[in-house]
Length: 335
Figure 1: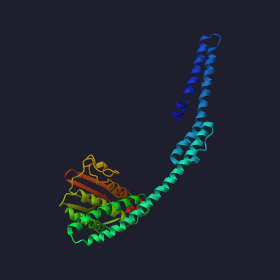
Figure 2 (figure 1 turned 180 degrees about the horizontal axis):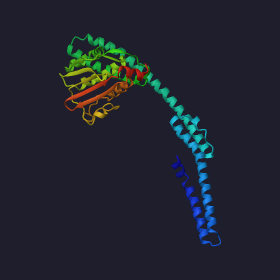
Figure 3 (figure 1 turned 90 degrees about the horizontal axis):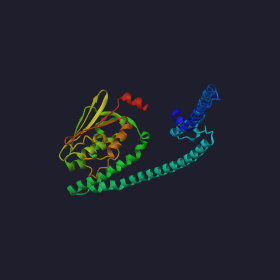
Figure 4 (figure 1 turned 135 degrees about the horizontal axis):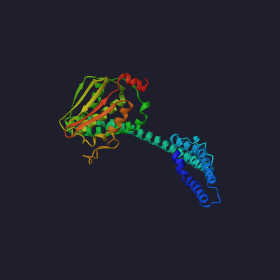
């Protein structure tokens, strides 16, 4: 702030110094003037000017220090230090703009909430005919046709499900219910939901669960597992197997989902959890939304789960979940 103040007053300081130099020059060339007296006067004037700058610094920067705090707090009540006419002009305009921006933000927030509620209502309404479609598909006699219809139904169901959880994600903290969960039961339920897709591709699952109990939220953990499993099935080659294993290490339960798909390019690996990122090697894949892993990571963060990815091109990818220790989870959540 001192540097900014001196830079702002640079012209005045240079003007004062120029006057002192001019006065000393006149005293030097004019023998009728006492150079010593003029030098003494310049010295005293400089001291007074420095004191004046010191006083003005504290008076003039008080308003701007409050302005910096206001930028962080967005509270106009902090700008009560305006003293000069210019400061009052700034305060008046900031106050009017702040009030206007708050009104716009409040209106936009109301519209967003309304849009979210309408979208969630629409999603729930669409799920009703989807359920009816599933019952109708089950009555189809042609096995090949039934498998194809089930696969397309599943794609729609997963997209709607992802959209629903995306809208719920900002309010996840109020939606959590932490309990002891059976990991095997959750995985089997998610695998069973993907059964039609897996049968169509000839993809199987192998479960190696050494640790099968975790402390988490059933609904949101199921959503995270769903994103990892759908990704694994999607990128697995036909007639391949996906390995799911869990184990305990250093007090943490770890779960890994390993596929034998095309893998992820090393330059893409740091970005796989970024919102909207799909791939640079298969950028033409219009079916990918780039949202599944992004949403999974955000949900995992709220559950204090660390999610990681390892991959090798043409070998496969492994996505891992590291659950917090029980005592660590209690400390983080305050339960």
